[in-house]
Length: 392
Image 1 (cartoon, helix red, strand yellow):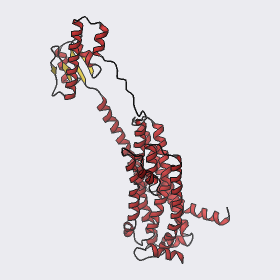
Image 2: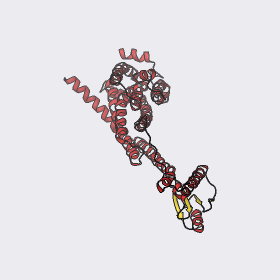
Image 3: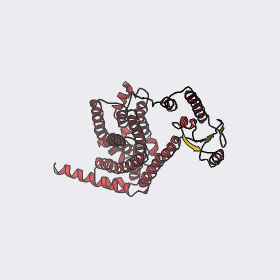
Image 4: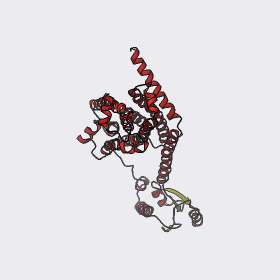
């Protein structure tokens, strides 16, 4: 590495350090990390509570110690036995049980009987009557026990890994949404920051010390490093909460999916950050930023097409393959596709290489627009004007 190259790297590091410091000192930066992570963790806790409430079986009281109905109910509900009707009524009023089956077959409830629980009690009473008839006919004890408690179902899954795939898909989907939102917010901030430096003429002072491409490269590296800190903190908090609340049954697969998504996000972030920075250099006022970032926003919105295609019933099709290998779209489509189905290694490698080539071309071409647009004032600078300005 020669002296000029060392100087270029040193200047890029200085600009990058400036951007990282500004971001890490920004209260909004930390507020977005805390609020986003807290909301997702809260959603996991609510999911756990609701899941727990839904899985708890109903409780049914049965009057009579030797009731056959109690034995028939036990595989499906929680059974509480009572020696007399008075005790059972008290338990029902205290909501210790949802219903009480009396000795004569009647059912007591506090307010109303759900249709599902009613069917369960009715089936248990029918089973109890059949068992009593078997006993009258002299059936052995083993036969009556088999009638009350049938053998467990032998279940075979055609896709035993369906649960793991579902968790990977959920992790990738949540991750893509988080990273998309972060990229959108960061991109707007980058464009506004570039426009602010240009409108305040600070950029003229900076360009007296460094070249335009030093500023662009430094911004990309610095803001990318700050975003990486933000992402790692959010993903760590979210995955920890998901594992802690039992939402993930295969946490290693989820962690692997998150790491793969982060790997694909880095080049995607660099690509879009460059586009936003270039767009910001084309305006002289912050009020005009929204006019120039529209095309970038639309391209970024298109990147969600991949995840949408991946979660369809038949995701492994030609359209998804093309989308997942297209630069600008592959950062979200390829990790989502890899979470849902097997992807040939050469396709993933080719998609990543195409993304890097697109970044190299964009930095080279976009750097000229960035340089030509920074020192041109008076409304929105057209791309052609910026390119002509960069040639001089």
